[in-house]
Image (cartoon, rainbow, N blue to C red; front, side):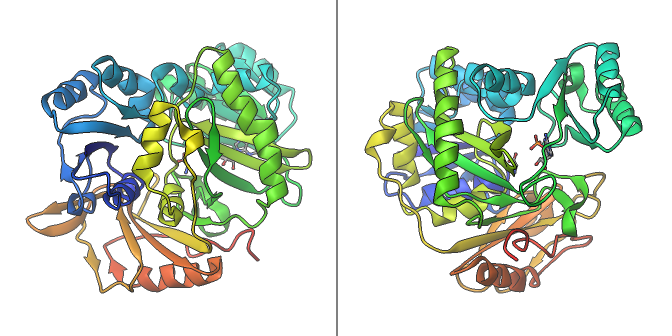
Length: 426
Ligand code: AMP
Ligand code: GLY
């Protein structure tokens, strides 16, 4: 069958690469894709947040039998609903279910109501009320814009002044746009061994009844080595996660994953797709930091290369509500992904820099994030540009291989962290 993948980053390149291996998949289209995806798929130049335009395109392409919606914004807008209402098969939650990511206030209320462990919080739409609450402390305090903000709408404020400035930024100056109409004020979680605590991302397939976690991975959200600098969309990932042992995975399944699926059903919002659990290990056990309604980026770039089962088979089982019939298997060993970003990211950066890629070692996966080809020349076209991914028997081995290949890639202003895969593995 022919399949359409919605999205244009490194995550989508990894999804397209996994689907390209499936005996069930003939041709892949990608809306909008990038220069790397173009080697595996036919690119479609339609704005994927224009629901009607996407619906019309799929209607017109009778050969497309399945659509995978990867990014958060079209899911939050209701692209799955649009396509399903026109009789098409999709992977991705509908609008009512995608709200688990699109509104942090919704996610927090859900967790409170169903006793799912997370940081204590209050939600405010009124700036003065938020201010009065925040002034009382304690500090640090965490401020979160309610809506989608490209992974940047979270401020950790060390003292009263920072918290007041942060509230003003979110609620009055609208630094994250309408996402800041409401704000969640959250307790700062402290870790078991580290402060704020070790974090792990666990993505899980669910058809609304069965939930099957993928292998756990760890993201590096800050821009610079040693977790310094601003939060980004993610500067690199590794799998496996050394502290995510069987006992921890069981705790998360019983106290977080199964209750979340049940809670969404009880609310009349059954979730079908990938649920992403951003978790922190605290003194009181594992807690939810955030939910996403989709595959993580760049988590997907280390997780999917380890998947032995046919991804298309899993997608269809989720759509048809028969996930429990599929046995999902993973390779042993480790995978590391290093993100190569444009100079200045996550703030201002330039596009259009020529990229040179030397001969990469066998087995290295180069996923494209923000790239385009202009007259045959590969150029940068976004903040996160390329993802260099390598496998190994251990994280250390995978890490060494990834960085040996990072050294073969150049573009003006190229910036990356040199410590991906070191934390928690020391
Ligand atoms: P989020 O976008 O919700 O994943 O938040 C971004 C990052 O902020 C997380 O990965 C954590 O490192 C940090 N963070 C978020 N909420 C808290 C919290 N309640 N306590 C400590 N750190 C937090
Ligand atoms: N890597 C974090 C995210 O996808 O939101």
